[in-house]
Image 1 (spheres, rainbow, N blue to C red):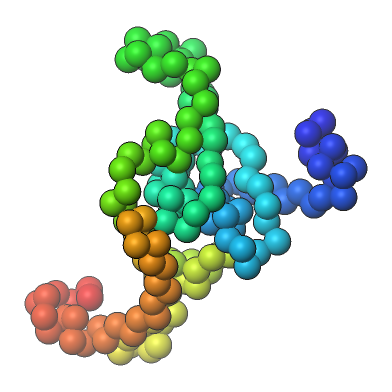
Image 2 (spheres, one colour):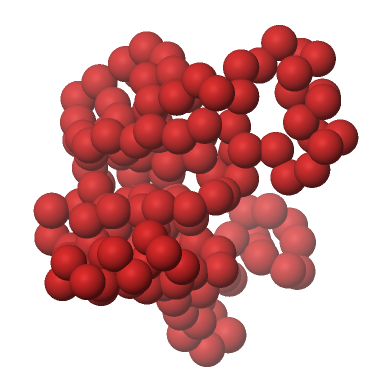
Length: 157
């Protein structure tokens, strides 16, 4: 609470989130948003996925491992992890040949969710990025369910 008050006192705004760590990380490194910082505790998988996206877009990420309980803390220490080490996106995603891809399932701040167009089809929005080239692609796709059913031989396509 103290940190949030300090941000507000400095003229900043605070938005609390309960999920959507990767989406929030994308907002924080995107020049087209008003988000400047993502601060908090999230899951390790989300941290690694965010690191891949951040390496593609450009930006910085720092963090530490934050065990949820004593058992998790002990397991991390037993595995040789340094819980005081500050990690960057380069520690979490080594090299310069990583890809990031996400498709919206439900509407969010970064991607539109699936839109069903009657019994025949649906549309999706995806974000695909690559570290080596710095390419960022936003893809709008239309899916023809009848053709997918014919190809896969299933009723649920």
